[in-house]
Each structure stands twice: as structure tokens, then as C-alpha cells.
Amino acid sequence: MLERINISSAQLMILEVNSDLKEVNIDAPNLLSFYYCGDDRAIISFLTSSDHLVFDASPAHDSRRGYYSLREFILNIKPRKVLASLSLSVYHMDGIEQNCLSIQQVSSIPPSIKCLELDSSPNEDEDLYFHYMNWLLSCCCPKTISFFFQDDYGMKPFTVFVYELLMGRKMQEWFDHFGDTKCWWHDLKIVKLTYSFNDDEKVDFKTAVNSILLSTNDRKSVSFSLEL
Image (cartoon, rainbow, N blue to C red; front, side, top):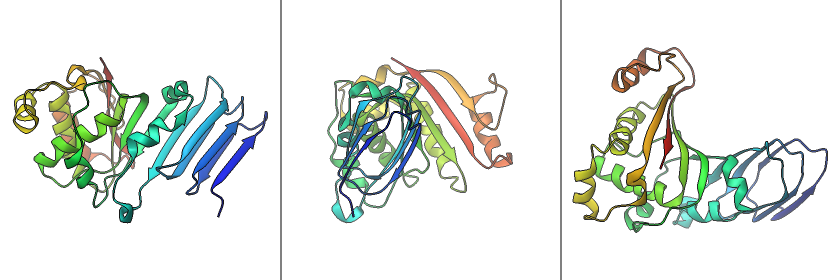
């Protein structure tokens, strides 16, 4: 039933929080691993932190509340330098479309984070894909985007779509949706592709993605390393 926790420890190295808190204050200079799963409206503050911190977050959203405040969640993490260690897991949930369709294009670069991790995708509707990516990339600037495949192979067409979008092959369709205004992330470039199920870095992207169905790896992923 707590709404706020304050944690202070010079010895603490691993911390996991699974709770809908309003505020988390951490003073742990030797903290190496922090995982947060809870309310996307929480304020998380690090009074001290290690340069080797691994920060994973899965902000949860109550669909009854409506608006999903992903951008606010990121902005509510202090200090900003901690975001360089943040791997953010985002789940597509029922009702999230209203966020995607209402978001305005953001010309300025949003906060930079380490990784954006996607375990699920919108329904196989390319029109919604455009709005979904516009929403995600108006919230954060990821160094890496990772797509995780489990039993939901709806991720495959979405991953191919994002690849083609970042490679500039969907630019005309983008302009058809949003006009001729260029967004900041149109300058993002894929500099490296990584597959958890294929060690051949020279393999063609579509060939690798098509081989997902044949892989026996339980946690299959495709990662795009990006740079501006």
C-alpha cells in the first residue's frame, strides 16, 4: 500500500521493484542492477548511482485510465544521465491506439535511452504501424531497438515494417500519412543488425527474419543498433 519508498544503502547492488508507486528515491552508489515494473506515472530519482548501472523498466498502464504516459515516465527519471543505462520494455495493449492516433509529430529529439524493447506489436494494420512508431519515437531516442519473438509471430511483419521505415523505404507512405514534415528520427540509420538465433552477421535481413520460425531458441530477438 506504499506510495513512496526511500532506499539508502552503500552495499546495495541489486534492486527489483514490482509495485505501483508514485515515487522511488534511491541513494545507492554501488547499485549495479535496478528493475522497475509498476505505474507509468511514477517518479524515479537516483541521488547517487554507479557508472555501471543496468536499468530495466517495464512501466505498466491501466487501460481504464486512458492515456499512456510513456514520455512522462521517461522524463520523470532523474538525473537525466541515468537514461543512458535504461532499457525500456513497452507492451502493446488494448486501447493504446488512442495514444498513437492523437500524438503530434515531435521535431525535437526526445530523451536518449539505451534500448527500446518490444515484445508485442499492433494488429497487422500498416496504417496503425505508422502511428505506433510515431508515438514511440516521440517519447524516446533509443540507441537500439530490439524485437522479441515468442509465440506471437505478428511481430514479424511489424519488424519488417520498422526495418523498411528506418531504411527510408516507407518515406513516401509516411508523408502520405503525416504530410511533408520531416521528423527528427528520419535521420536515424541502422548501423548493425543482431540476431539471437543466427550468428551470421552477413545474412540478408529478410532471410534471417524468415528463419525465425525454424529456430528452436526460446527467446528469439532481432536488434537494430542506431545512430543519428
